[in-house]
Image (cartoon, rainbow, N blue to C red; front, top):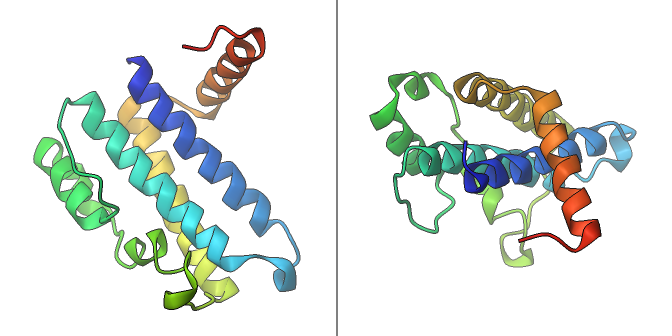
Length: 149
């Protein structure tokens, strides 16, 4: 696996860690928009990692349906993923002109989708959380030493 694919996966995993941490707060303190956003981001970045791995170019969009379709053209298993509704969290919850606050239930549902996609993608890449955490530690060490490329 090349460095670019690993970087996509690491960035996606950081979204997972963030959403998981936020959901550990008491319900009345959970920033639900942030949980939904980071859930969408993990899915988007993992799909893009898969496309990069397979050398498929993609635009700078956040539409998960388009990304899923591109992935499905490589591997039909992607057709089984239910990503319906997550795309709105890429932009709509981030800006006041499209303002709405998702419920805690919605946030947990988004997290569940993210968890499913994370496991699905880890299987596709034949990796696990331990491996990704190792990559993160390696990146941090390089950064601390000033050796980051």
